[in-house]
Structure formats: structure tokens, C-alpha cells
View 1 (cartoon, rainbow, N blue to C red):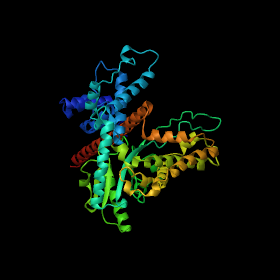
View 2 (cartoon, one colour):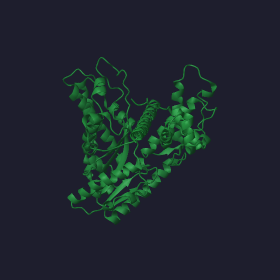
View 3 (tube, rainbow, N blue to C red):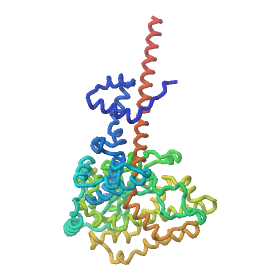
View 4 (tube, rainbow, N blue to C red):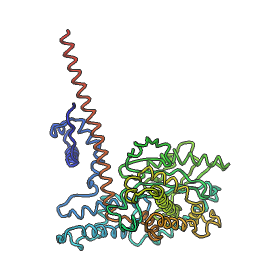
Length: 504
């Protein structure tokens, strides 16, 4: 039996990293901490991940004058800012100030009855100096100064619409050839807050509506007849449900990618462009006898770098990429014009329907269904039902602000299809013993897209922290096994040399 593995604490790893950065050699660190050089190398190789678990030096400079409450606020605010930026949303000074104060106030309420003057409600002043320091340390970008957003956004959008129209006319693009893609966060286990388990139980004991988030990129063309296979980013590479069902990822209804924070990255987006989008668009154009040209309209999210065309495979060079001006996403981003909202309503409808199917002939409660019968595999099946369910009319009418000429008259005939989705969700309650009204469903969709509470930010931060720790521990265990294996080999070789000497 090999030696027992000793797992290093995060604090110890940070100490090793700090000493190495101060000039201490790896061999000396190995002697100081009683481990092999290989283990030290593993820790140093993972230093970016390890630093990400606690406030990074670029984010927080520890000071005796700063309270633990203030440090917690900054960590949660950084999570919120990153989430907003990955959605391509506009951030202003005032928005960040307001959120910082809200988080600080929420954390303050969690403190026992008394608190120090340093941690009083008036102690945190979100001044311009504070904002500039926070912005510098966190490296946040695309932040509009106070008072600039409203007027500049509208003016930039108006100019862009004219430019876009001229490009369409000059290149002769058809609605079938013009695509838009946007990513959104999906809290795939979230339900309306006023959902009741039964008529007797008015709440869901122990139920937290937001426990897990994934990122989903949706894409379709302006004619609404070509939906592209979505890109999905989640934190586990191989969830337990995948292993138990022996899932082949290439056969999933989404392109599956993973990282510790479930965030879309440039690498993932480039892979999706070449392995999914390019192939799908080329096949669609060929099958419909359309000219081999396509235009993909994107916002300025971090995963959409300006030189993205350079990363296209040679066979997909017929695809041109056009970017929306900064801070115009709410006005011009077509996926934000009801498409993502409709998708999430359909997703919610299919969750209720699935619950009804599972519990129709059983005594399962909603909480039991949530815990034992709703995993990521079911989430993927529901996504595969909801995305095709978004109507052609919804997809077409989403272009009415950016490209009104491409929108057929029938697309402006109200929003009956989406209203019927909400009504269908509400109607299911009668047969399920649940209490949900239209306001609950609409609020759920708004919450999915917009605000994250302080509690939810804390859950996201904790989840990301846990996933990164697991990744580090897993890689460390592999490295330890390799070290033990090398040691065993040396021991065997030494014994063999002795045998040879005896025989000689």
C-alpha cells in the first residue's frame, strides 16, 4: 500500500506561490514544506487557478483598515460585474455604485444586532475615487461614465441602423443569410418564487430557487427558418448524469463545453463557429439554393473579439462578422427583442409539463421531483424542446428595430403565441396542485435575464470556488500518483541492480 496522500490547504499553496515569486527556488521550497519538487511544480503551474479562489492581488490589496464586510462586498460585486459583461449588458458608474451599496446593505443585515462604527450603513461611500480604484483593480471594461449612456446609446444606434441598411443593400444579403447570436445565463433549476408544493404546503421547505447556472448561446437567421445548435457552457466537464447514462457529447442537442465558472470564452465561441455554425449555415444555404454568403451580427461581449474572422476555417471564409456598437445591445441586439424571453418561457412550460408527466401517477411532491428527477440530462432535453418551439414570427419580428425591411407584415400582428405560452404554464397548475399566475412567470423570466440578489451572487461565488478547488485537487492527486509511481519504479530498479550484483 502506497503512502497516504497529503492534501495541501489553499493557504499553504498561496504561501508557496508567494515565496516563489519572491525568488525562493523550487528545490528549497520542496525542502521547506517537506514534499517533492514535482508537487511544488504542480502548485506553481496552477497558481492562476489557486489565486482565483481568494481575492487576487489585482482585485484586492489587503489592508487593516478594510473590514471583512467590505471584502465580501467586493468579491460579490466582481462576480456580478463579470456576469453583466458576459451578457453584453451596459454598465455605468451609477449602476455599479447602486449595486455595490445594495450588496453592502444586504451583507450588513446579516450581522448580529450590533456592529461597529466602521461597519455602519453610512461607512461605505461609493465615491468616484472608490469606483476608479475598483475599476483598475478588477480590470473591468466597457463602463460608461455617469450621464453618457442614454443619449449616446440612442444616437449610436440610429447611425448604425443606416450603416447596416447600406451594407445589406450593397452586398445583397437576404434575410435567410443574416444571423444573430447572443448568449444568456440560464438558472436551469429556477422556478417562480410563489410556486406551492400542494394546497396544504404554502412554501417549499429547504428549496432554493437558484442553485445552478449555465451559459447558453442561441443563434438564428432573420427569416426565422434556420435555428443553429446552441452552445452550452457548464462547470462540470462530465456531470454524474453523463457518466451514469454513458452519454456521447457529440450526440447532445447542444455543443457542450465546460469551465469552472460556466462562462463563455473566446476559445469556446471559435470552436462553435467552426464546428457548428459554419457547417450548419453552409448546409442550409446549399439545400435552399442560396448564394454562398452569410453575415453574423454580434455584440461586443468578451467572447466576441474583433478579429474573429481570422479564426474561421478556410471553407467558412464566406461568413462575414459585423459588430454592434458598444452599449447598444438593449436597442439593437435581436435576440434580446423577445427571443430569449420566449425561449425561457417555453423552457419553464416544459419543466411543468415534465413534472406533471412524472408525478401524474405517483405521490411525488415538487420538491422530490426537483431533487431526484431533475438533472442536467433532463435540462438538455427541455432545451431541445424549447429552442425549436420559438416561433418563426418571434424570430423575424426581433429584427424590426435593426432591419425593419426584413420583417414580414404578419410578424407585427401582436404577440399571441408568447402569451399563450404563459397561459399554458398557468393552466397546468390546476392539474398539479400548484399556484402560479402570469405575473410569476413573467417575473421569473425577468429575473433570469436581469438581477442577481446578494444571496444568489454568494451562491455563484461559492459554486465557482468549489469547482476550482475540485479541479485543483483532482490534478494534484494525478500528480501525486505520478510521483509515487516514479518512486516505485526507482525502488524496483534499485532492487534489480542488487539482484544482478548478487548473481555476478
